[in-house]
Length: 114
Length: 85
Image (cartoon, rainbow over all chains, first blue to last red; front, side, top):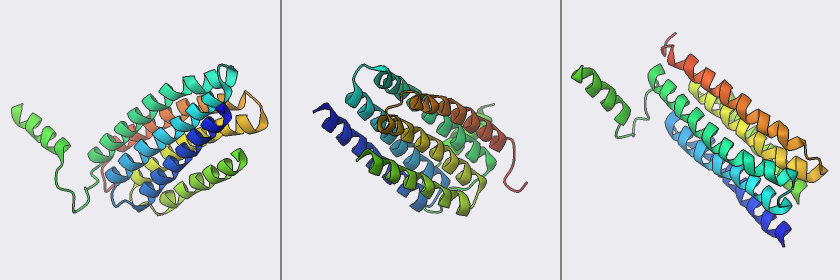
């Protein structure tokens, strides 16, 4: 029974990974690609780890897979945030159909207040 | 079953290199390499399940931190340059 539930969770994770890479390939802009890929691939990889934990229980492999989940969450989110900030400072334009740029508004108002 | 999932995940990870190859800017390539690292971390527990070797997931745990440090370094490098340089 545990084997079946673990396999189902792992398959759902692989499907999430596939949709993340599809977003990485098809979306028009750096920022759109970044958000699609980061969210879907983080959840998919955490799903694979959770499925491994369900299949193995509290053995060495299962505990290590459980420990890896928060590490993946924190490092993927922090790294993608740093990449988005670096890309904005690098001067990459938004897509021509994007409607609002909150970060630029915040930077200009901060400069005005000084 | 697990073997099939490993093959599918490896194919998905190779698809990231299409974005590395065609990406119009430097940031696109960095995003694709970052995502490739996380996908490889997802392959390692499946390999550990397939071969019944526990140490294979340790490679994934180490890879997370190496990939994180690399991403932070690339982002800082990107921040210091301008678009036309």
